[in-house]
Image 1 (cartoon, helix red, strand yellow):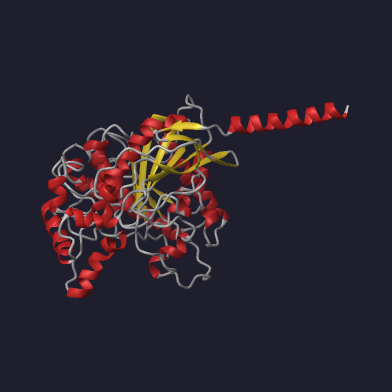
Image 2 (cartoon, rainbow, N blue to C red):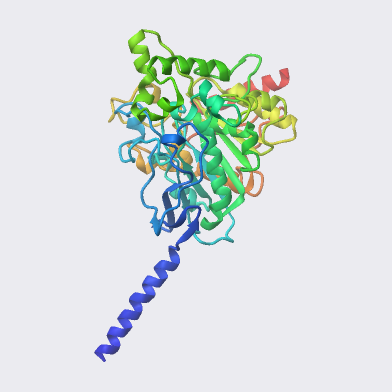
Length: 490
């Protein structure tokens, strides 16, 4: 009898192990086999390489095929963020709680996948690819506010990516241009983003995703990246919807250009400026440039300024160079050359400049071409209990980036004293973004209160607390009045 009981126990254990293996399958993707980590029914796959490490001879080159690994890779650790300056307490560092990430590195071409359907290749779940912001010089896809648990709970597979930043991701240089088979340099970070979309196209079915239903979305420089991808011929067909957050719209008569930190340069102008600084530092050949340490290249601009007293800004952002980018986003929109996909576009009430008129103008442009665009404003001033006096004035109110907690419903990772209204607002916003990924409509399968912004109905969805918030309500009416006036003037 005892032997029979032991056999039953062994059978139960083996059955449990088999069930666990069935629920957490080993997936086969580019590079090898992989297994994720489950939390409350959501499987996270962290630190998946989507291209070879862009180091040594691959520094400042287009991303190359991923290097295969042996055995089963347990994807339980996030990959390296792109190399960037150290973050210190105060400002955004305090807001997002940085500190648990992997070390910064040029070896940064990793992505993360959150899904409820690993191994179910016929599930055909919608996919959303998140592109982080940070001025093209900082940030990473695994920041705490980008937690993908709630997106997966909405039956949308979330992919968050890292890409090359700053001097490693966007530097132009005459010798790099001469070396390139396409006769250009720069935009390596955008090429990384395109490579991640190609990876999604080829691999996402293993996670239960539909490669024919991919939404790209990003905020700030991530929103700027979405703009570039919507214009780039190299990204055409790799995504099917786009969300642009806090990255401006189109120029208007009263606002001829969107808020921008730097004036655009040509490929040649930017390259010569970078060459001047690198030559001064002794990096006057590609061999020396690629042999230099990460730290030397990262700091060369600041060292040059400190030694010479000449404040030179080395251009480090996407550039129209004729290959990755044929024309500016604004020109592409006016010329009818943007990706023909549904758009959502918006900003926060206390953003980096007033983007409302430009966003409305973009929606009017889409409307004139027979396309839909939904506009929004995030108008919830974030609560502050004074527990973090180091938080600067720019992080007061509905500041630039404040909507990220809500779009990912990741409020639990933040120190702020959230109310039930904040959780409800976050649920509303996450649902709208997830609906857009699913149905190309933030309302869901059917139309609802959020109508597209058109000349006839220049509507902005105002995201605010349900309880009394007269300032936000008044702001919403002001936006509608301003956009209506602009529409009438057109």
